[in-house]
Image (tube, rainbow, N blue to C red; front, side):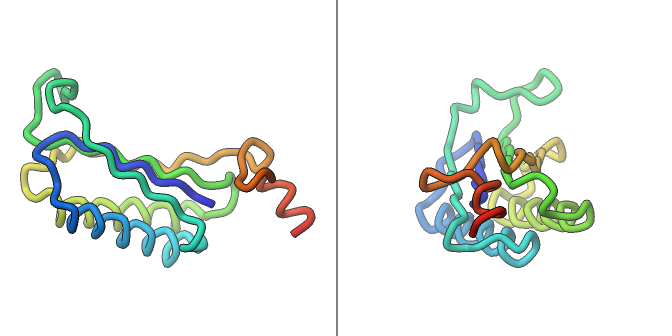
Length: 128
């Protein structure tokens, strides 16, 4: 039940590019982190560029990715592969103006601290 939030500032993306991000991030979560695609949520949201600074200066394009997963379900190598794959995807979508200071974060939440459909991840692990 992972959720991935992609926040970006810059020119508005065409609906097809947003759909591409949805599809490719869902595929990365499934193929690299072994998450169920049908339970993966991806939110792409645009914020005003005026609100973003990198090194104190306003960038042309800025992106931040936060992928939330259950703690302990992936190895360091898997998370590194996801981060690399996400950065490759972002470069293909946002182009050369994308700052090298683009962070992809894999946040791990304890299984007893989150869930879906009224059940925690811990309860699903103990009693599927």
